[in-house]
Length: 327
Image (cartoon, rainbow, N blue to C red):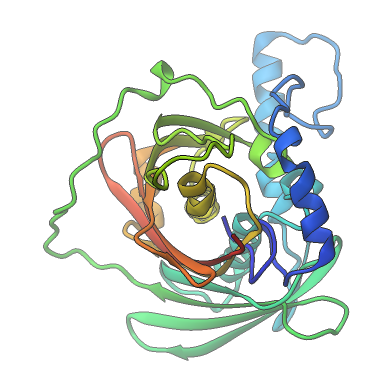
């Protein structure tokens, strides 16, 4: 879950506010999906004929698209944080990464599809507007290399991202990785215990590695591995942007290992895409099967590796990150 150095699951550095937030996290986890999360943008309407209703819904902007909207400029683009994708003390990092990717995809000089995106967290992001300084660093026949700096109010850079886009051409293909075995999405119960608004925007269905934040003392740390289905709470066809966001939607591995919530934040996240936009559209999916694990927690930092699969068994993306924790 993308953040930055010593904060909770957001961008920022350690402070007293985080410690205050930590003390109330456990009680917040009892919050359930008691209220529909379609959102305030879906205003009440009179009953319409089925065909009219369907047509109206297709024209209604999804909360994810609202949250990642950007306004074009020459090199400096503008975006805004979203209350719908807010974490405890800052924006959900996955939505910030997806917003950066949208600016790149919408850029008139962009060619090809994302091959990799790296997001480094440098400072907190406050509620409100932000600027994206988007620059094409180098381009050749096959690839483009981009750099994006996110800042607010003329202050120093809060997030630094780099991305590689590529023109994928037909070639020999081989997927050595095996699809993780899992019951179908519909057979798994949704995970109900959420608190932060961004978590409520997703439908998490754990197959293995269910979160246990009881803080129960055991002889050894718990397994940090998780296998789960992830989809938008209000279904949305998965594209490159939502795949980018979902690559950061795993709960912190240290939460699983320690069975408790601790101060945590991603320092650096890289996501590799193994399909192009045409491949992903052909999958025609609104959920992914995801797996995540960690290999080490040491001197305040830990790793995380994840995979995102289509229900048909295609490996769509892999992701790696380094995260700070305080425990």
